[in-house]
Length: 180
Image 1: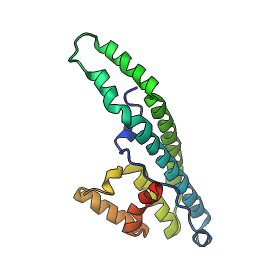
Image 2 (image 1 turned 30 degrees about the horizontal axis):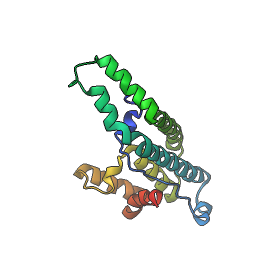
Image 3 (image 1 turned 135 degrees about the horizontal axis):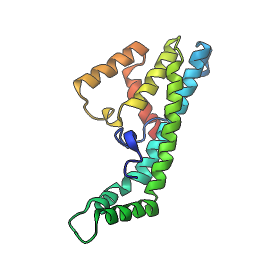
Image 4 (image 1 turned 90 degrees about the vertical axis):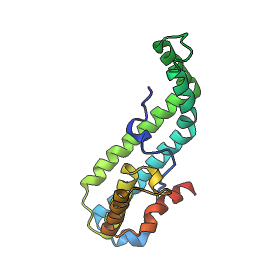
């Protein structure tokens, strides 16, 4: 179960997104589909934040030790299968495996809701902003928010923000909200 966090491990381990609820006035000015988008955005970002927090607190702290057990060929005293079995036992006993399964279940739920969100048309700037925020949470790694990013990533983020009418400071703000 080395890759239980599958593609999510590549997205980083910093907790990223809490539920940013839209103000009632914003909801009143949106269409029905946009109200759904705003609700889906909040739910998805909450699921992602929880999944990342679980991975950060209960999976990644054991990653180096797990890999050391599984991959250490220096001892030469036990076979690769025996090392793997020991690593898996360590994963179960440390809670690493349970954390991966719990995190993956949350990511799976978020994936399903993201597919639903993508199928709903945004009819207002608030709906488009909700879709962009969710897209960023689901597809971009966390490290782009606090670290220099490649030129193409920076330009993509700027374009998405502009098209959705989301201020650039709001794009990086949603991570700080989850951590607060």
